Image (tube, rainbow, N blue to C red):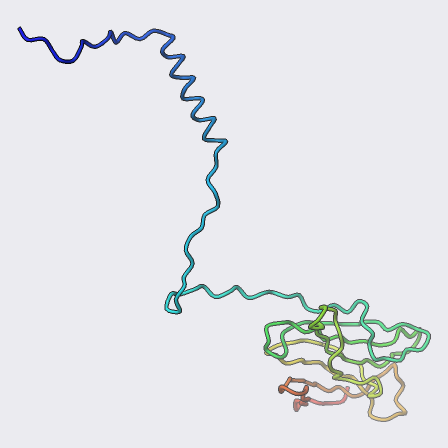
Length: 195
């Protein structure tokens, strides 16, 4: 009979100490892998013009507020009050403008309104007046202020003569303003009527 070139294998009976040693070794490997972390991923970026890159997400901006704005309105000893305001993109640049109806805080009567367009200053983001749609000298009260389809609309209440008391406007006009790239152009729809 020929002898095997490989010595006989040792006995393969396991004892509890073998299991304890194996469990300790596995726990050590798991603990070591939690301490060693891979570096940051460095995926290759597209380098040619033919490879598509996702477009950057548009930045959303908030419309300019009216707090702290120096409106070009001479109120003397009383302060200017923002009666109404609305916001929307009037020039198509993706950034909203604010339209504000402002009048002096008069104790009696109906003070005339002014209507201003505000935008954000490009350098520091502070709100500033860029256009006047209604002057206080026009002696009008602006109601139903809205923005739609890049157009400002309002109902203007006024007076047929200087003899009409300021409490009781007797003329009602619909008005709309649209930016033409250089200025806001006013249009008057056909529904102008007396009240």
